[in-house]
Image (tube, rainbow, N blue to C red; front, side, top):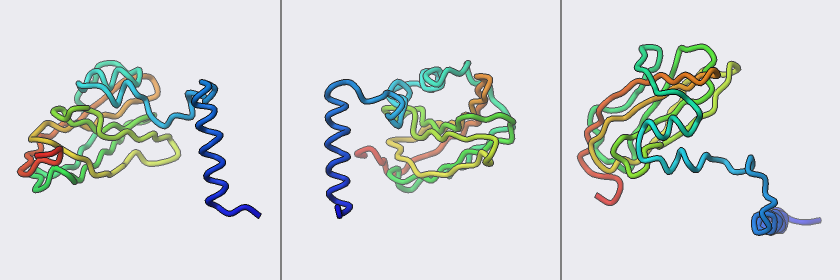
Length: 151
């Protein structure tokens, strides 16, 4: 009987072999590389196939006014819109704007929370992308007193 460590080593070896030969399916990757490498809010939203975002009262962003430590800034996003497919949290002045992405469906309430790094004071966006490709956002400025990205 194999133990968990041996099974994990074998699984990683198979994944490495598939990746090296180019046979690893793209759908197995857990993120959209273009979105996470985007430098602007518009580019990150566009990477998910959505139109330019429009401000909406149906999207809410929870974040502190002042973050004492930019290394762990609590944030949340929620929406009362119907048909929300993705919830994004974006930090405008971070090296990469997209901080978090959550896939949601009609089976769950689109309400998420996370912690992210912020290198400096910046506008933070919560973006809800609907099934029909429309994007809606809420925005808030968060002041950072101690930078989390090496500051």
